[in-house]
Amino acid sequence: MNRVGTTTVERTEHTERAERTLPAPDLDVVVRGSGPALLLAHGAGGGIHGNFGLVLDDLSRDHTLVGPHYPGAGGTPVAAAPLDLDELADQLVASAVAAGQESFAVLGESLGSAVAVRVAARHPERVTALVLTAGFAVADPVLALAAQLIKTLAGAGRWDEVARFATLSCMSPTDLANTAPSDLDAQVARTLADMPPGTVDHFDLVSRVDVRADLATLTAPTLVAAPTGDRLVLPQNSHHLAAAIPDATLITLPDAAHILSTPDRMAWLRHVRTFLDGIAA
Image 1: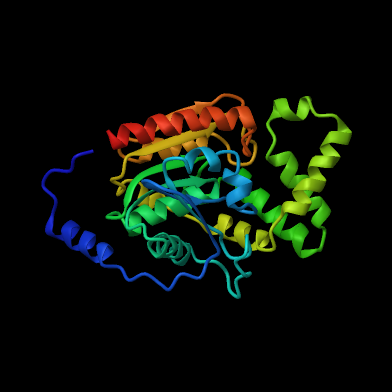
Image 2: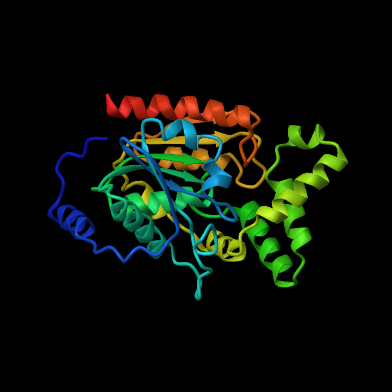
């Protein structure tokens, strides 16, 4: 959206944000490919390969992918203190700059969507576009309860139950109806094995995130993708994001779960490529 008549205060605020000092990067980072940069922001209890693994090869053919792991994911050590959204956003930007990328589109998934929004709010001069998938601005009652359950179960050492709850929450109703009990048990075992040490810290941040005040300030072209079968981050959250971000485009992934299946991820990829190609044109 074109903003006419920008005030002195708005220009001053933009200059202050543009001159924000970046921290020394200390996150484990996946860097692949060449071309325009895509900064990847993963979800809680996930990672770059867990969230984006199905499309890394495709996107890296013509983009430079920069995928930082939050504290307690990938090779990044667990944080010594509760995660701070501003610090995490700045660390992602510092990771991209350290990889030689001064500007980039940001692709956020779930918690990563809130991280992406804060990146764009704090560093608007660097962000060329946003893709927000299964995102939220603030935890609604369903997500807040899920985060609390995960923290409570993990605090009691009941990690099997954490994995079972996470698995059920990240599957769509159709997936659940079509999954045999033995297959579900195998999926739970995979979830448990893949759960990073920082999972509880990530969900603690989920419960505290609030980027609602950032949304109207965003200037980067934005694509919002809503998986309609999502039982963890309800699709209404994506609709709220799209309504609050100036000129955002909303697309739906019919019956898709919170963790996208291969067919749903391929549909997502087509939408994202069309969007990014339009920005570049």
